[in-house]
Amino acid sequence: MDEFRDTAGEPVGADIDTWVRSFTRKESDSSELPPHHPNCLGCGPENPNGHFLSVRRDGDGVIAHHHFDQRHVGAPGIAHGGAVATVMDDLFGFLLYSVGELAVTRRLELDYLTPVLLDNPYILRAAVRSREGRKLHLTSTMEDAGGRSVITATALFIVVEVEHFLKSQKNPRT
Ligand SMILES: CCCCCCCCCCCCCC(=O)SCCNC(=O)CCNC(=O)[C@H](O)C(C)(C)COP(=O)(O)OP(=O)(O)OC[C@H]1O[C@@H](n2cnc3c(N)ncnc32)[C@H](O)[C@@H]1OP(=O)(O)O
Image (cartoon, rainbow, N blue to C red; front, side, top):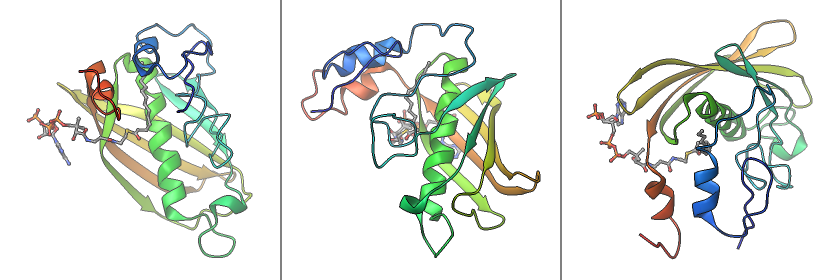
């Protein structure tokens, strides 16, 4: 089973409970945000198949500088649309550090305005557009180095309790 670490990087074994509860800690003022966990497909530093997304705070939102590589190829030279969606979804997940509550993706919608090229630098930004009860309406963009918008995305995240993650384990304790 995967070893989880909390947001301070401390190993917590396979204790999903501890991992989830670590998110209730308020993040420091540091603008660099911690990965969701070491093996996260979007941002985990220890996932060799992942995207190694590195995200910082940017005002009320978040920002990342990112490029896709040969592991993410769809058509030759172009990033696979699903790989792009993974990264945008994960980027939205970093807004939760500011929201301060756990939430999961209910709906994710992307407009692929132009091809996302491999080994090309992109700037990704995301922000919370609005909140209605448990519903978080999120918005993001990916721009190329020339400031041209290549992707726009919106998402609906639903705030969940810790139990959402506990009952999703193979051997749920609740
Ligand atoms: C500090 C915190 C940091 C945290 C980091 C954590 C790690 C993050 C890692 C991030 C990694 C990246 C992220 C990931 O990979 S997250 C992983 C991928 N996502 C999931 O696995 C989620 C799977 N889905 C579910 O578990 C349930 O469906 C959830 C829990 C989401 C909601 O089931 P629940 O039964 O609880 O709720 P509900 O069905 O009553 O709906 C709730 C409300 O939503 C409204 N609604 C529904 N659909 C739509 C729609 N299409 N347009 C508009 N509205 C819609 C609906 O009408 C209702 O509204 P209202 O009637 O209340 O007004």
